[in-house]
Image (cartoon, rainbow, N blue to C red; front, top):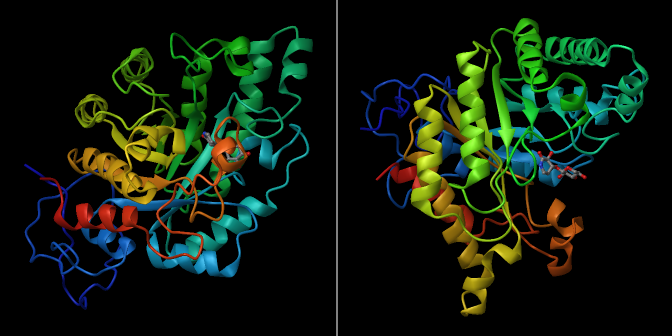
Length: 377
Ligand code: XIL
């Protein structure tokens, strides 16, 4: 049985956004059906998502223009900064931090009433972007790299999470802890200095800085959502919970690179994570053209293939009451990181998002909206 609440209609006009759902603790639906929650309803994605109690989000690039800001407000109820809140984006080196862009993003999103996912506090990739470029050097020089790294992490998390407490609803505290292939931990600068203890340490620091924020670990799977990496991700989450870590959710990035996941396999992964008592979100949805070659080579239109793929992801989330959100990695097809990332840039434009470059809803948008409208089947 589905327990996620449809918001009651008290005082609301048809399709008017309802107040934000408090995620994490689904309540029983007792009210009348919201007009956006009917097959064929013509509400925006944001209105439908609000009514369904599942966040529909977009990653917002730096320097986005006003039309795109407006499109976010119209179509989405949640945002992630594509880059502005990463540790290395704030602090290219550990002692040269500038919160200006992150502050502007949080001020804008919060005053617009958007839910904010903070991304990402500790990420081992991309020195100078994912984390400060001098962490390697600082720990290599230290007599006691573990203590040095622990205090660098504490200092950053304390400053950042406390700064946005009450406005950032959830944080990707750790991004991509596993090795790319997933056979073990990623041997990042954090792992090298502290072993996997860096994860507990970061979670504790984030929890101390904002006890109300939902704390996530965010990870990607290249193709097999039931394979070694996915299984090791679940095992890592389980181990952290057994150790008493303040962990509330797991993000599955859901960049599709190779193929569209098998719905049952993805559903099982989401279910296994939820069964640990964690919330789940699909945090960075998009799809390279390479993931849809089978369909497009067989003559299917790209946008129709995308609609099917987005449908698989949305259905898997809707089937699990603890799946609290779906976020696309970008706003519209005019800007996608895939178009400047090898090898996916070779087939640019990948056009992987829900809105086209003119900000018009695509078939994938309509497919996700309809699934949100009718709910888990
Ligand atoms: C990417 C951004 O989209 C790019 O603009 C940036 O140059 C590199 O990072 N997984 C993540 C995201 O968790 O932070 C990454 O974002 C994409 C892969």
